[in-house]
Length: 141
Image 1 (spheres, rainbow, N blue to C red):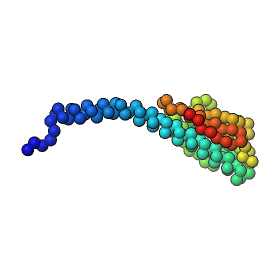
Image 2: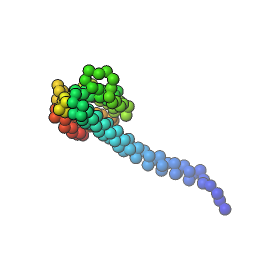
Image 3: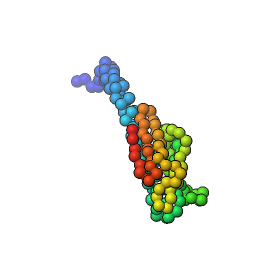
Image 4: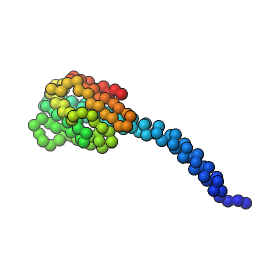
């Protein structure tokens, strides 16, 4: 009785697996890019909502800083952050344009910067986080 595989059988299996990986890998890479960009867009949206609610709850000015390195929430006039997390670059997502700062009034609307758009990219995947002055957030492709 024969045990094992012949060299020809192993080469044939490896060729088929290589061909299938060559077809599937680009599709998988694009899907991973879309997932990461979507995740970062939702993180920015969540940070915006958190800062807005903190301004309402504390009745004070709250500043949200969005940079490629970090998302930071501070109370106005204080140096120490109330909350922070790594920015888009930690996930390999690019943040186009300058860093943004949103200042929330005690009634929950942003002061100064209004109707801002934050563009996020990774590979061929893109998302835009659109923020209105009234605190509405929309995520578009």
